Length: 273
Image (cartoon, one colour):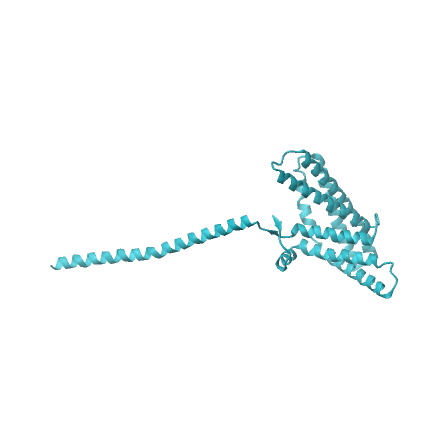
């Protein structure tokens, strides 16, 4: 499948999904962080105003995303039962730790949002930073799990074709890179390992684009379109034949009725004669 072209209908289709809207907002949130970092040490009234506006936009977008994050833990919670169906014990342990640390992040993040909303903003920020540490752990475990899957896909011959092996390898590489960049960003946000707002903002925009690419619509190949068109044409021709037959049947019945009537009239004439 090939990615659909960039047009208004495709963008609307992406925005109809939660992930598409969330990552689009996240792109501008981390873009604001990059602008804030690049203007932090600049001297001048214009740079100071740009820095303040970027900070305000970043904080408001982060709060909006946090408010709509309620319920994101439910799919992770329901997928825990699939963890114990994995064939390898090490994979089970990694998947369980990755999901439980992610659930801890969601829970602490909700508590921090409630504290920010109803009590003190600084206390809520510290709680949110604590939850982000669990997200760092979850991302690092996801990188390790992705590396194990990548190594397994390279050495095993379970996939019959080269195309399937390449697809599996690209998928695992995508997971490793995405989660590795995410761990670096969140480590800075949680104040666990601070780097640079410019670097983190830029990496945040990159990972947001990567997440949008996951929900980006796929363009149907020409051969598949031709098959669908042929199938529709066949079904429409079959329907037209059925309708034609249904129109023929009443006329045949009328002919039978008229022939019967002629026979009756002929018998009456013969009787009179």
